[in-house]
Every structure is written in C-alpha cells, then in structure tokens.
Image 1 (cartoon, helix red, strand yellow):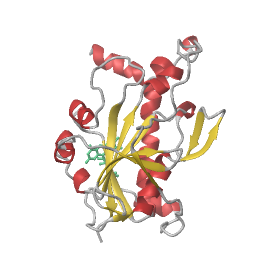
Image 2 (tube, rainbow, N blue to C red):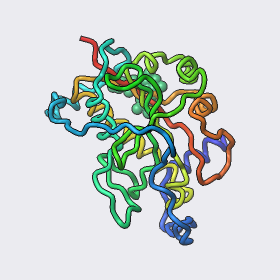
Image 3 (cartoon, rainbow, N blue to C red):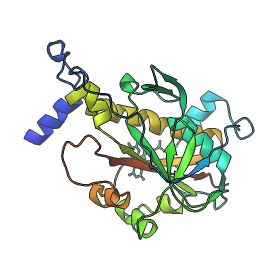
Length: 255
Ligand SMILES: Cc1cc2nc3c(=O)[nH]c(=O)nc-3n(C[C@H](O)[C@H](O)[C@H](O)COP(=O)(O)O)c2cc1C
C-alpha cells in the first residue's frame, strides 16, 4: 500500500509551496547534453523529401483509422519512410539559445526531450540490417555494434512479443532521466512519461499517413532489455544513466 501511495504522489504535480523545487538548474549546475552521440560510429544521412511518400493528409481519417497493428506486410519499408517516422517522432525543427534547446515535431515539458531513439532495421530498403541510433539534430543514423544474440533475445526481453522482430523496423526509446531531473527534480518523472505519450501517438499518426501501422510496446523485462542495449543496469542517480522506456513495431499494413 505504501508503494501505491508513493506512486500516486509521483503522478501528481507540484503545489504552490514547492514550486521552487530544489533542482540542479536552480543551483546553477550545467545543463546536461541535449543529445547522445556514439563517437566513432558510422553515420548514415537520411533523406528529407517527404512529399512523395505522404499518402494521406486528411487528419480526421488518420485519427479515426488509427489502431494498433501487430501484423505487417513482408514488403520492406523504404529509407524515406523510416526517415519520415524518425523525423515526425523526434526530428528537430529549430535549435535555440546557443544550442541549448531543441524544438521538435513533438512537444516536451520544458523542451527537455529526454529520449534517445534506437531502431532495429530488419527490412528497410537501402539500410543494412542491424541496430542504429538516431541523431535528431543532424537527422542521421549512427550504426551501432550489436551485442551478441541481440536479435535472438530482444523478443524474449519483450516477453515473447515477436511482432517487434518480425516488423520491418522496430523503434526503441530510452530515457536519460537526468535531463529532466536537472530542471524538474522529483517532478521530472511524471513529465517524462507524458512526453513519451506524445512520441507514441505521433508515431501512430505518422505511420498511418504513409499506409504503415504500428503498435506501442510497454511490457518488457527491464534488466534484460537494458543489457541488450548496453545500458548500465545498476540502479542509482548517475547523471548519464539511461534505460529503456518502450518500443514499437512498424511496417506496412497487410493488404
Ligand atoms: C503505453 C502503451 C503501452 C502498450 N503496450 C503494449 C504491449 O506491451 N503489447 C501490445 O501488444 N500492445 C501494447 N499497447 C497497445 C494497446 O494494447 C492498444 O493501444 C489498445 O489495446 C487499444 O487498441 P488500439 O490501439 O488499436 O486502439 C500499448 C499501448 C500503449 C499506449
């Protein structure tokens, strides 16, 4: 019961009394890096000409047709389509204030954007199969070295939800919690979870607009999944800590 009580409190916003919370920002500590880079990795630039792939611009239809798709056509998705989905969900439109703030296609409390996006390309034309990390400012992918058995084990880590590995591409989002804790201290976590909802719904609608389908996945074994991504699984308050928050399979909707 005590745990439920604490978790409910976590969901609540601050009260006027603790509005000036004790955050590192209020103590003038430096703002953490906006994005993560895997130094030395091979970079792949992504096309940004989306006009020719957008098939449905009717917002009402997108909204009402949206549903979770867990079965996908065997056909590959194109690099342009993957590029569009990455741009829609995390792409940067503007970099402000001496490169300390990004404005993106999705909103984020305090414009913090605490997530990193990883994709596993299973069947994307023009992209070698494997794991990649998205660079939202440059709109590029970094090709990552796979941990042994990644492909064999990731579906198990996601509790046997094999549609992730059967999909032409799977999205995985991690969070670097210190990015939002720096500003919002103990109220950061509720804001971050709301942020992920924005990313998730944007992926659904963006996929729908290019005749693809997606399904968000929030159920997985945290430690197993984090190990596959090479994240440090030790609990604690490290400023560079990163862990997985969810995933999604994406592919063309079956005819
Ligand atoms: C945060 C979140 C987590 C979810 N996790 C899973 C999941 O682990 N596995 C799954 O098959 N579907 C998952 N879903 C999809 C929901 O089951 C689905 O949205 C719900 O059944 C309603 O169906 P609809 O999306 O077709 O309207 C998740 C959806 C959200 C928004």
